[in-house]
Image 1 (spheres, rainbow, N blue to C red):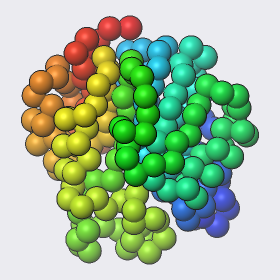
Image 2 (image 1 turned 180 degrees about the vertical axis):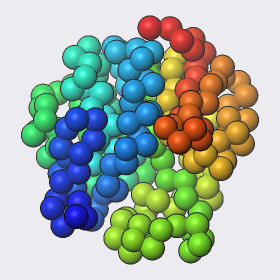
Image 3 (image 1 turned 90 degrees about the vertical axis):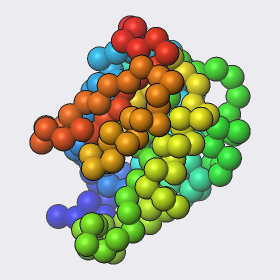
Image 4 (image 1 turned 120 degrees about the horizontal axis):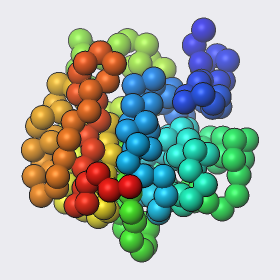
Length: 204
């Protein structure tokens, strides 16, 4: 049954509340979380684009030594994420910031930068019709498919980065991060799904 009907979606062993204001968490995104947790379980984390909060909240629940700031431009999405944090964790270790300014909206240094940004092409034959009909387009379709990755390559500052990427543009995105040490991680289908890297890549 459609998670928007039940109001619930599973992610990394937990049940998240979802509404049409947020994307339904994908199983593929669990690879992003898993690979990040393999490399570090502490530090100050910045996430861009929280949606339902599934990534930020999972990291906080799995890692008591993480403090997370997550930024989203959608107030309704942040309301869903805050509700999920209250249900699944709670406390001050996750801060939710509403802003279009992204990096300008936060202060201080971060150990980890993580994001599953919008990256789809708004081309009918490339997108499932149910996705177009029901899921929020602001979380799916950027001005161009590489928009956020270009922004991240210029502005992200952390010792470790973890990004979900579309497999058909994974190597092009990796090329944007030529100043970093990076690695592409495949999902269970054998296609590149996660870009990991950083200035101190591989440190725990």
